[in-house]
Each structure stands twice: as C-alpha cells, then as structure tokens.
Image (cartoon, rainbow, N blue to C red; front, side):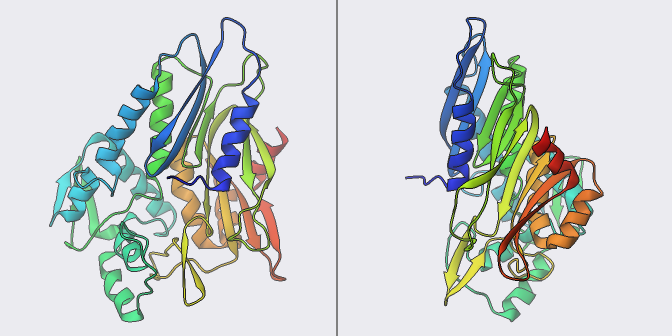
Length: 339
C-alpha cells in the first residue's frame, strides 16, 4: 500500500477539482493516474482524444526507472555506483548529471549527488534504519562525498574513488515530471497538469473557462512533523512547483527526529529554522534541484540567493526566534500569488 502524504493529496484535490468544469465537444478532459517511483502520479490534460494513455505513461516511467532508480538493480545509476571507475551514461542519466553539476556549482556544493554514502549512513538509503553514525564514520565517509570526485567527459562519467556513489533523489522526480510533460507536448497537448510524488508542472489553462491552474502549498502546524491543511494557493498557466521539507522524510532515534536532508559539507542532517521550501521554476528539474539546497542554506541566505536569480522563486515556512511558525516569500513568488 502506498500512503499519499497530505501535501500531495491536497495538490491532487486542488487540480482535479479545479478541472471538473464542463467541456464542449471540441475539448475533452482526460485523467491518467497510477503508481511509480515509490509514489503516485496524476496527469490531467485537455485534448481531442485520449492519445496519451496510461500504457504510454507507464512505459515512459519504466524507461526512466531503468536509468535513474536506485531500487532497480539493473539501472544505470546502480551500474555507476557498483563500478570501480565509471560508466557510459544513457541519455536520461546524462541529462540529469549535467544539471546536477551546474546546480552543485551554483550552490557552492550544497547540492551534491555524491551524498549517497552519507544518506546510507544516516539510515535513508535503500535499506531504512534508525542509525546514527558516529563522528569518525562521518569523517571517513566525507572522503567519498564531493562532486570534485566525479568527472563528465562526453557521455562518460568517471569517479576518482571507488567508494563514490550517487543519489538522484533530490532531482530525479523533477526530471521525470519534465519528461512526462514533454511526452504530452509531443502529442500536441498544450493544456495539462503533471504531478508525480508532489512535484508538479503545468501548462495552459482549464477549458473552457481559460482559468489558470491552481496549486496548493502546505502550511505545517506548530509541530512541523504534523501535517496540516494548506492556506496558500497560487495560479499558474506555465511552470513547475516542487517542495522540500524537513518533515517529508525522517526517523526518530532516542527521541531525536533525524531529517533526510543531509548537508554534504558537514555530513550531518539539516539543522536550521527552515521547515519547508517551495520553489517555482520554468521546469521541474530546476525547481527540484534547488529546493533541497535552499533548505540547507537557512532562511536568510536562501532568500538572498533566490532574490538574486531570475530563474526561480521561493516560498519559505520556518520557525522564528520565538518558536512559532512563520512564512516568507521571495518577491517573484509574491507576484505568482497576486496574478
């Protein structure tokens, strides 16, 4: 059984309910849902016929898993992780690696796909545990963690140390959403919402009203690990929205909540005032790549980082100095709310 976190369920409800208006004969509304990548997907699109079927979507997702999934033993990512020196990449892994190297440089190393040895050590790898590594283990593993230890030449990704392993959890679903959106557009579909694991990309408008699509943003309660209803909605006719949160994945050990967001520079889980970051960008791979890095920066640095960029906007939920939940948005994100 797959449990749908509240933030994903709400997003699903928002766009499904918002697309229930009557369509004239020239417009048909199609809904495709299923399970993939350990979660669910939901696609709504307008067209003259149901040319993009569940079978087509599932085949594309299986193709992506064969490249990017740590849970498929034969996948390209696992081939790299199990190699001594590196491998030739397929098109999907190549595209994702190119993006990760750009974002790694942009974020001064806070986004780093070589984080996987530390992810495993903290109990968030393929085998889950409540493990807390000691300082000596973390220090040792940091020798395996740095994008300086990998090198991309043409379509060959090499590693300078056999212990280097990559984890695309912070970007693969965003990329997958973009691939599904591209698939729709290849079939001349230009009004759609694609959602996979809570990551969303939209284009066009609802038919026949021509209204923008509605996307909900979660507002955590006083206990950031307790899911609560949403109080923010933005209207979009293009772009992507993703969210990273300290409450998304965590485990408890000796009464301590350990988040899955590991800082590649320190080797320790995120420990600052931020509870969640929602990022808007033109495509989902960009939004997905930056949301985790912004979480690790902390509010002040993250907001300054976003305000200096034209390609992303962000909405932050954080615990202020008095201990209560507060929110802050970048100027570009405020414009999205007002549109």
